[in-house]
Image (tube, rainbow over all chains, first blue to last red; front, top):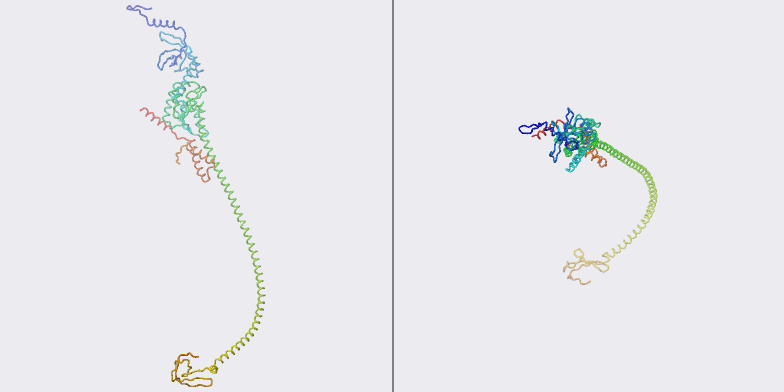
Length: 468
Length: 72
């Protein structure tokens, strides 16, 4: 036991540690249920035993830390329970409720010997974390951010976050790669880890890369598949969910599992149950574009054809009407002409006949009139002949009478007769004296009387002729 | 119109043309021109459906230079 060295009571280290071991074994001699965050599981591949690091944090600061031991057989059993209930193995970073005894080993020091871990508690804790993540994203207004992005008319250029060798990636590329409609997609793989804790920074890093060249892409597709139901809790990680929700392009998820939706799937633009379904979703968008184009083409052809047919029909109809109208018009004119020509002939004949009749009538009238006129002229001539004789005789008698009157007058006017009645004629120098003025006393004048003449000498002349 | 019409514009213009033709607003005079335009648009849309112009190498180069920029 202890020995005395230089008046001091001295223990060996083994004595001390054995003493501590005995004290702890006496005081903490039973199992306790403890809850803690399992920072690291620390599986030793060689032995199969685990040496978890357990911590308790308050406001991010570690306030307690302890190492633990989980023996291979216990680990195996507990891990199976976790896989069955939580769909994921016992892993780093989860909060666990475990049953343990405190053990002190002189060599290994203070340890917790874990005999059992309650999977139901961890499930609840995960669900709590999941709910907290949703609540936080909603509170920050990020939850629906990606869903509110405008979706491209043709999601043609796809940035794929996946693993090249995964079944999900193969399914996806098979569906869109050689589709029967010949739709062309541009795909570029951004390889990332898709399950377990490391998937979070891996996916976030690739999202960052895509963001740098986002103008080359229409959508982002996160594709996982063939990995079973395990290791999906990373998709409930707040940082990853935030990166997806705030991504500037629509993020599509095809993670492929049957349990509750992860938060990443909730915040993505669109979640498909499987990568194949995601591919179908993209093809559907191509159909939504292609079908109206195809229908549009058909409609345009049909309507254009119909329009032309209708116009043709209307035109034909018009031509027929035109022809019919023209024909009718021509026929009408033809009939009219025929009628006119008949009328003209008839009229002409009638006129001819009438003028002949008139001519005949005129001829008859003329001959009748001629006879009458001749007779009249004859009678008139006769009358005139008689009248001429009578008139001539009358005229001769008148002339004879007038001649006798004239003879009497002439006889009465002869100077012999005048001289008989007492008048005389005076001649001076052989001419009849008509004025007293030419005479002067002593002139000789001869006065002719009825029974002879006397010669006288002028004694005196008087110009005044106041006597008879 | 330019050749650089986007397929979204082509799609929308095509939809509008189809509507116009369907509603009978188009006369025979315009028909030929409209059908010609529609044919062009259909060709643009169909070409878009069946081809892409993106180049992986080009994107990788851009990505590298973007990362360099960030590193500096």
